[in-house]
Picture 1 (spheres, rainbow, N blue to C red):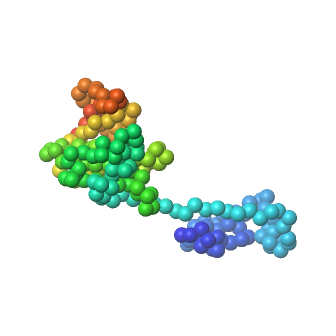
Picture 2: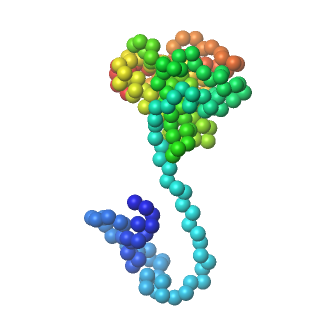
Length: 194
């Protein structure tokens, strides 16, 4: 419900939440009665209320080409865009996380028989830590499980290891480096649920 609709429905003498069956809240004791407050001129300056437009987060399937700019900007900003391509991009499932119409995160899922592989998971730095990447990652896991994969695995940067472990992944194999950055392989069994 829009803020203006809520404001139009409130009782000025006391504050009544919009909607039926909701309890009436008592007016604040420090406030003068509504009639007194609105029937005399105020000496206080008017303040503007700035409201941010409401933007919703949603996830859509996208084309491989749509992932490249964000992959490159987040994962490999010092490399050309083509460095972020993966050989089997054409056959993979690519998901985009959108805040309104703006693409803020991508993740790609590759079919490897009984296993699915997650690659090129990236969220814009200014949108990290807000739950958008987690939602995108969870959607990829759900899609892998729904497709009948028994296991999902990925190669993740050591700096993101805690993120993956928090979501049920465990390290396997030896650590390695790519472009001077430490990586680990991580996996999760999908047969036990999500």
